[in-house]
Image (cartoon, rainbow, N blue to C red; front, side):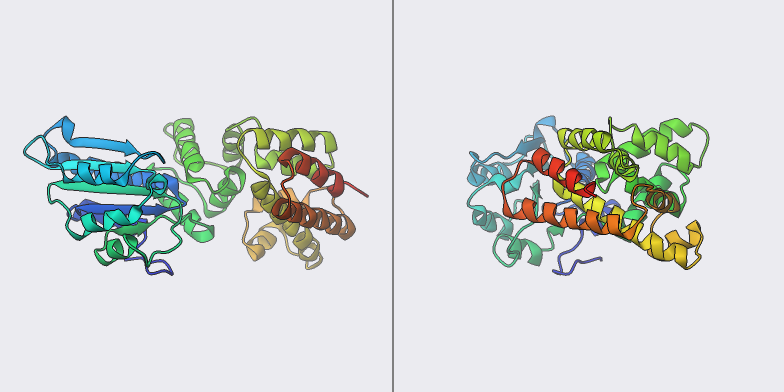
Length: 339
């Protein structure tokens, strides 16, 4: 079973084992990966359906701050209406107070209840109850956001399930365009599946066209506008990104990656590496490398250094002041293009 560095089993081990294992009386999911937590909830709901004989024996609670954990425990202690079991799903456990009260139920859970709890976010102290006891009873599972090769493997596995053929390089490109949010990536898989129809393999150009249409602008549009030195369009795109849910933390991190690759491209070109060799050397897709290398406005190390300095200032302002995000975006672009 895969475990993370805190020795808490991963939610992925549960998902893979669930089809061939018996249901536990309690499941507790926590972590930043809401998509995978919700997927696990659906899988347990499907598996539990064979044990439920009445529609009244399935209940989903979206916990609010005003709610009491004692009410949750009372519901878990209640016997089912039918002759089978009862499924009780509690979402947003992080909103509840007096969480330690759950400990008494964890010690002696009701056999006729399947209690599934979702805590959307990390937990600071896993050695405190009820988490310590949940861990001892092997009911605690963490949903960490996947990064790098782990996320690429997840994309590959998901595409395989949908019978979509996609190369490793195109997987990297898809993540670079769409981002690491698995719910957005899954939307793209559905679009790709519909687009391919009877065809199996997706090309780089098809991915670019499909993924870029997800919303009015993508982070890729911002990188392209900045790379061309188009100040007015860069401001328009960055404001759109902020209006559609992105924040400056994400935008700054993507720009740091962008300018890092541009800086690396100077050295890689001097070494005489072609685009395929260069992209492989730094572990990115050929498509993304070419896009960075062709940033015509940033054709000198001086301009790239200036961009890094602007990003450093923006990151510092973000962490040390309450500056408005659009004001910060305007200042950042002004400093990036300041010659």
